[in-house]
Image 1 (cartoon, rainbow, N blue to C red):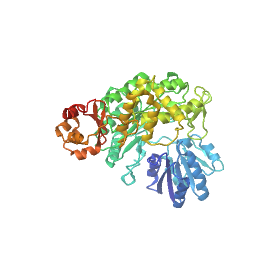
Image 2 (spheres, rainbow, N blue to C red):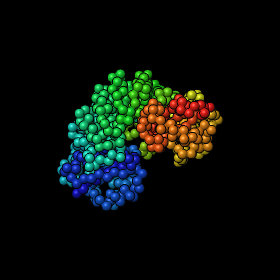
Image 3 (cartoon, rainbow, N blue to C red):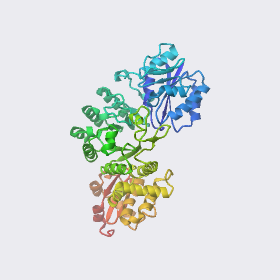
Image 4 (tube, rainbow, N blue to C red):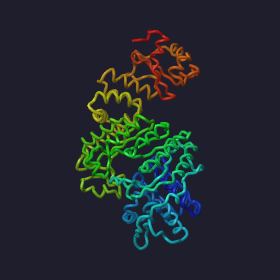
Length: 561
C-alpha cells in the first residue's frame, strides 16, 4: 500500500520542507513518495500524475497560497479514487479543522499542529489498523471528532530531511533551526506557541556545511526570529563565514536584537553568503502597540544602518499596509522613514487576516474588510480606504520594478534629492503607469527604462545622465535608446584597445584584467564618456572603473570636453 505526500509550492523553484519531514518520518516503514508541484501547474496535469500512481493515502501540506487549489484537487481525486484516504495538514487547516471537514466531505483526516509524531501514527492506523493518535487529529466516525492540537516536537525526534540523492541545487532550499517565536504579533501565528525550541547548534553547522558542499544556491531559514538567541546566532554566522562554497543563506532576524558583538561578527562574512530580512512593518507607535509589536525604532534603525554601512550583508526590510491606526499618510511616513536607510530591498506587504490570528479576532473593532478566500488580504479598514489600498498595491508593483530591482540606483538617488520625499517619487511614477495603462502589463527592462525616462524627462540633462548610467550598468546594451544617445560616446576602438594593452595602467586601475589580452578583456567591458569622466563598465565583475586620469594621460586632452 502506498502513501503520496503532496507539496504544492508557490513557485517551481521552491521546495516543500513539510513533506520532506513527513516523508523522512515514514519512509523506512512504508511505501512512500513525495510529489511536488506549483500553483502555476495545470490542475488536470497534477491530477493525472497522482491518479496514475494509484495511492492508498494522499497527504497535502496546506498554506494560504495553495489551499484553494488543494481543495479543488482533493474533490476531484476522491471521485477518481473513491477508496483513497485524504489527509490535510499545515497552518491553513489547523485552526478551523472541524468546520472545514464539515464543508468538504472528501477530506478524511486533518492533522492539527506539528505532524512529525502524529503523521506516522496516523499512517499506521490507516494502513495497519493500529490505534488512532490521541492528539493532533480531526477525523470522522459517526460525527467529526476533534482531538485538539498535537504536542510540540523535540528537534532530536526530527530527522534531517535532505539527502544527496533527493537534492536539487537549482531550487530554493528551506531549512529550520528553530521553532516558535518569542514575540506575539497579532497578525502572525508564529508566536501562538510561546516556547521557542532550538536545534542543537552543532547539528545546524553540519547541515549548513552539507548545503554548501552540495552547491545549493539559496537556503532560506524558516525560523521566525533567527537571532532570538543572540550568541547562538553569532556562532552560526561565524560558521557560515568559514564555508568556502557559493551558497547564500537567507534569515529573518529581529533588528533590535542586533548588538555591537553581532556587527563585529557580521563584518567578516562575505557579502554573498548572507541575506537578512527584517520586519519593520510600521514606524507608527500607535500601530506597533496595537499589533503587540514592542519595538525601539531608534535602536532598530541604528543597527540596520550599521548593517548597511559596516557589513556586506544584503538587507531586505518589510512594511505592512492596512494595519490598525496606519492611515494613508501614516503609511507614507513609514515608507519615507524606512527608505532613509536605503535598504537593498523594501518589501511592501498587505495585511492578511490569518486563521487563528489575534488580528482576525479583532477585525470588527478596526472595521477590517478582507477577502473571503486565501490569502484573506485586506480590502479596507476604518483608517484606510479601498481606493488607497489599491493605489498602494499599484505603487508596490512600480516600486518593486524600479527600486527593488537595483537597476536604477543612480537615478533613484537623483530623484530622491529632487523631490519632497521618496513616496512622492513613486507616487508620480505610479500615476504615470496608471495613465499609460501599464499596471499589470508585461514589458522588458529596456522598455521600463523608456517609461521612467518619459515620466521624468522634464528634469533635464542631469536626470538623463543618471538614467543613461543605470541603463548601461544594468543591461549590457548594444545600441543605446534614443534618450541615451550622446555626442560624448566613444568612437575610438583603437584608443580603447591601446589602453587595454597597457598592462601597467590596467594593474593600477582595473587589476582583475592585468595580463589578460585586450581582445579577451573587451568582451566584458564597455567604455563610456560622461562629460569629462571616462568610465569602464565591467559586466563580468559587476563593477565600474573611473579611468579618467589614466585615459587622458595616455591620449592627451583630445577627448576632454
